[in-house]
Length: 298
Image (cartoon, rainbow, N blue to C red; front, side, top):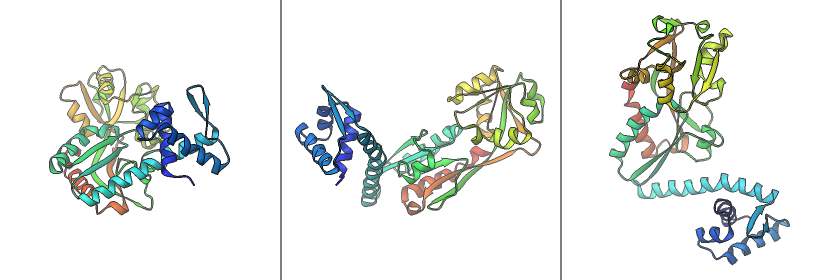
């Protein structure tokens, strides 16, 4: 009963805002578009939308079907792309999801090498997911997930690509800059900057502050690495980031890394791939290049 065209119609009506624009995008006449939905409504015994002048408003049932469309259509479209890649061998697109905000500089280097080796394959990197990185991987919204916190589940293989140390980055003018390592209590009077990630997923909280039952004076979330480190350099607060990244920025900013705790916090970056695509040449090539970038973690 429900066909792909019905899902496409609802998605395009939502995107375009009118039947005329939606019909044009789908290469249909407006009459054909309306007839397809009316036929489906008749079969279902309910209405999917209501007309208010020139505007269309989805019913509760219509909104539910739109939700399904937004979940299923990307999977179908991505499946067709993957099959086309299998057919051509060398052409296609690799969709990469990132759950590691500070790893973007590393990703740029990996992408640069990949694009040179695979001139017929495009790359797109996503950092925001409607239902999280793992859900995006399972739903085929992405092909590869780059994350420091893998969720080991059946159907996905995570491969470690490099080791790094999570450190506290402070201004060279900060009192903490003279310390060999930081204790949780040292941060009680400081503002802590972090990326807009759930607090329980931040290592400095989960592995450092929370076990010691400590909290920073303030916790501010910021999206931009550059702005965050500018704030740290101005001695407005501190942040937790990979040592290799801070070593790079310290060449032109007044910042320095300080070890978190006497033992430090050791981390790994993983690349997650669906088991059924481990043999895909594109994903194999990306994984090989990612492993070759270990110097960034030194």
